[in-house]
Image 1 (cartoon, one colour):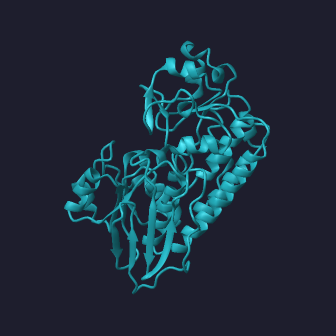
Image 2 (tube, rainbow, N blue to C red; image 1 turned 120 degrees about the vertical axis):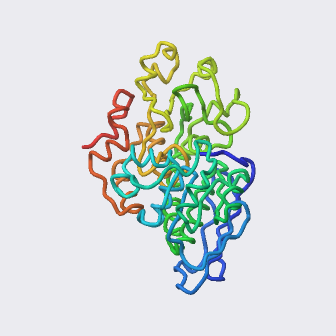
Image 3 (cartoon, helix red, strand yellow; image 1 turned 135 degrees about the vertical axis):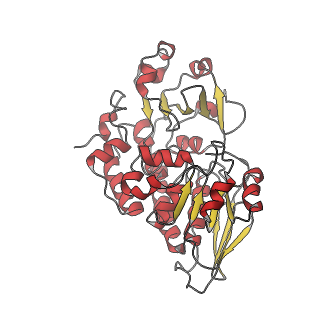
Length: 382
């Protein structure tokens, strides 16, 4: 996940079959992007598809794409969700593949586990020869010129994405993917569903009389701490549910994105809830058993939680973000039970045409790894 061009607004225009289907995003992180407009039907086989990506560059396809290489980590699972299958995914970043292997995406779509995942380095630098060998219709890449130029210089078609830490980026990605797959109506369906969940979360937050807890999200814990600072999606949803983020409070971390820090800074903040992301293997017990952390409120009250891992990691922005909002709302305010297992089941039917088993739901929600944390039994079966 990148946090590049963090202070810019995203404007996406998708033109399908010569008539405009505009998706405009320009509000703040707390509000949804504008509802997509257009016919809501896939283009005929003879009609071209033109997409203006988040660099402002227009890419045209003669017909819906059939082979896609994805490099940004959320993009592979997002493509599968938009398409309803993995047949048009040709390769992905290794971190995307790891999430599929360790989550349930590989179970739902076993083909994904056999796909190449050597198309870029950890910092998203493309392995141009590996990508060219696949001869894809399009490569999805972060929009930084140093990441895009080597691909375009090799004659490959590229769609550039940005992540400004806002929900409107997810809406933009969905709109682009749906258009290039020849399924623009799918973008409308996903956004309508997401907007409904966003309104529900906002309504719950507005109706509470008490202030929410301070919540600190660790993007990395093992091998050096990194926390979500300004202009991150994590900061957005912490505030969305009614919590506060100490990394953007009165004693904020400098800069934006995922920022390194030391334990002393965490001790000064004394967060009431700590979230451990899915970009390393840290679990709540690692903090509970370490004497260094014992005086932090979140540890004393056993409010350290591993973020769920479903079709993709729930901590960065993606198609399952509405489930993250509900999960975090129930973590921050455990007295307001969300019926999350039912919501996950319903959302997975909608996104993947898959009904997770009780065992899969336990895996997604880390019910074993989080079992020693306060109030987590609310997510157990039964």
